[in-house]
Image (cartoon, rainbow, N blue to C red; front, side, top):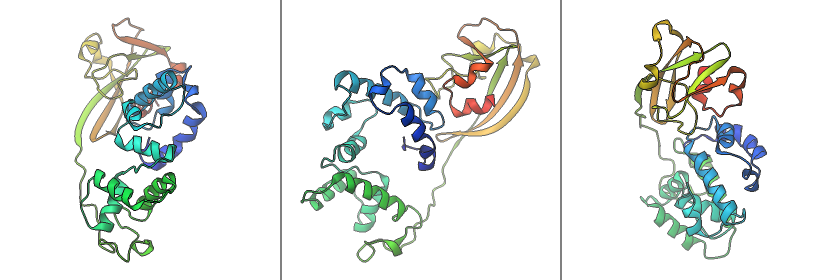
Length: 284
């Protein structure tokens, strides 16, 4: 969940998700859209799709038990080297060293060397000859590197490594400007007296597992509409990954038309849908 998502954002959602999905077994009678609904607001919805697929495999092939074998873990959707290492160390307390960007920064600063993930794992393995709690080590390194050895303005005066750290008390500033792709898109809020029109298989390539509000990208669909009476009701900026969209929202009041690919949802039931934050903002 923390991939490309802030801790604060996850903190606001984690209890809600755990209450609905407290175990692997709790996924058995659920569909992907149930998970997407509660995931809404975290973004990067491919993670939710991979999670659902992985849990399904765990339930079907491993009796609902999280595997403790790296090769099996890496075979699961969405699980790579880092995630498998974290599961082994934190989940199973096995000798494994998850190296995220924070841990990598800590080791590189202390050593003064540019090291790849494999080399850092090798160093940590050599340093841990005696039996230790690999769970505690992994968690403490993640916390220490994110709280003390911060990317910008590290707390060197509080750091237990400062007496021999090769980077102690140096200035670290973020000079990188994030380049965003500026784009514009028009969404159409098409309403009948009791329903709102959504579409399947949209041209807008984000949020693929959701039904969408139609946009100007859906040219074949929009060709069926008379846009002369469209009314602009709002405009705002919205960021998705490295794309900054200017969102224009137009309202159309029409009869409930039968158009290929369209899904008409009762207005009173839209709050029950799995919708990404962007569409919730358009609807509210």
